Amino acid sequence: MEMSKKKPQFELTKCLENYLSKYNRYLKLPISYADLTSYSDSLAVLDSEGRDTLWRSVIYSNMLQDEVQKALLEIYALLKTDGDDSFVKQLAISNIDYCLFGNSNPFRIRVINLLNDNHDYYYIKKTDASRICGLELEDILSPNKVSYMVDGKTMVEEHIAGIPGDVFMKKYTGGPNFSKIRMAKEFVKFNERCFTTLLGDMRSYNYVIDVTPDFDMEQYRVRPIDFDQLIYEGRKNHYRPQYYKENKEVVQFCMETLSPETVDQYQTEERTLIRKRYMVNKSRVENLLDCMVTIPFSTGEKIRTLCSDLNEFHRMDQFSGMDSMGKVLRLHLHKMIDRTQHRHYSGKISFK
Image 1: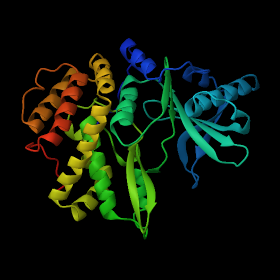
Image 2 (image 1 turned 90 degrees about the vertical axis):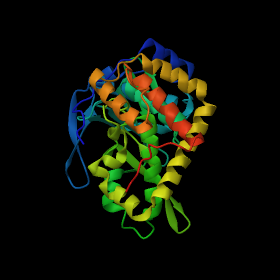
Image 3 (image 1 turned 180 degrees about the horizontal axis):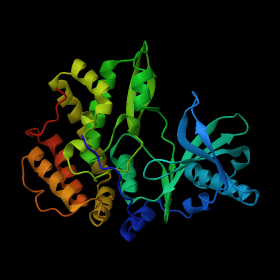
Image 4 (image 1 turned 60 degrees about the vertical axis):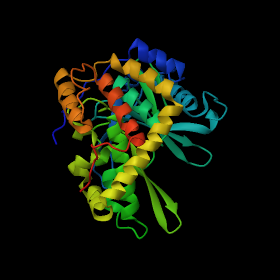
């Protein structure tokens, strides 16, 4: 499946800025993304086997170092405790790393607790409206909560903990407590969430696996960490993780362990939960969609091909003539959650 090589970033609109302010996502930050780019030197960050990770550990001049560290600790306090800085004296910034690849070229901030050496991460990135909307939909409609803040051209995101999907498939699936059935069940649900919200490019390195021990087995939760490809691509299968070759192994689990009836059950369960979350937060979701309608998330050609695919999937023609990915998402989301109440739908996703 061919993906777009590089998705453009989309600026914050006034509508989206007002939305973020209303829900306490828009805050004044003590340092910006542009400020962090004023580092004086950098060193390659290597993995445990000595390979270049394409992250650079950055160093600031003596004149800037203390100011940068102080501002980054203030941001951590805003992210974690709504600005209560009473505990900041026991924290320190141990690393500031800059990523050389990806759309957002983030800075990764490592915060360490001086009392017990425990550490945490967060990220500072260039603002991208599509990523913001993806984070919002994830926070509202999925079982996963995310914390982030925006200030003009700068956005801050908490670290989403978990084992990267590609690493999990290579190193953890052979463990004594690993359950193919539970992993298959969660992947079906994850697949349904991505398709319902039109979140694309969910290849194995763009999500993590959160593992929870549960008696003699393990429970799994798949969490996206890359929201850049929300409503950008032009084919419906771009929004279905099952079609990426990088997910071949976990799709094989689904085909080996789940019957079509069981897949249908798990899909319906997940849409039911999405629908319940939507009903609780209906005004907020619709407010967000109102903003998304006005943002040019994709090209006219991609909108037309996606509309054609979704017309076929939903067996209707209501997507025809739409000129905005925001409009496409609104109708598709409504149709997906309505299918939970009206079981006579025909666009079932199969893993067989």
